[in-house]
Image (cartoon, rainbow, N blue to C red):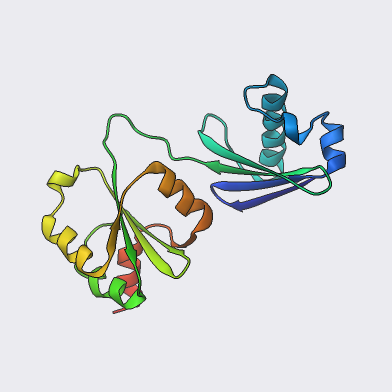
Length: 182
């Protein structure tokens, strides 16, 4: 068994075919509706917490499982953001073809709640706002849309982005860019 913490929100566990036998599990019968599978996942996450500090207790997460050639499997665990029902969080996601375009808008946008990803050859800027789109400065949105393509916000896309995109700047992305690229 190999347990690897990818980052603060993601964990990878590789179980060999022998590990699966030791846990009395088979890939084809893994189903979270099954109590044996839930117990296996719970045991693995407890081991992961001891070995890596990955804490998933009382947190929502996505779980992906892939079978390996030795009849083992690789499990990926991704912690999901908790949704605060009291506040409406809105995400504005913009895809930039060119880093220079991103630099062109950084100084005009004053927000601390932003992250920057790279997905393929695109730069993805995610701005988090506690406001609805109607109260966000329309000038800002028009400015961004001159340099980037606005992506439709969905939790599935944000999960995909956190899973397959490369996180370049976790917090204060625009301020960080402004600081180092003036």
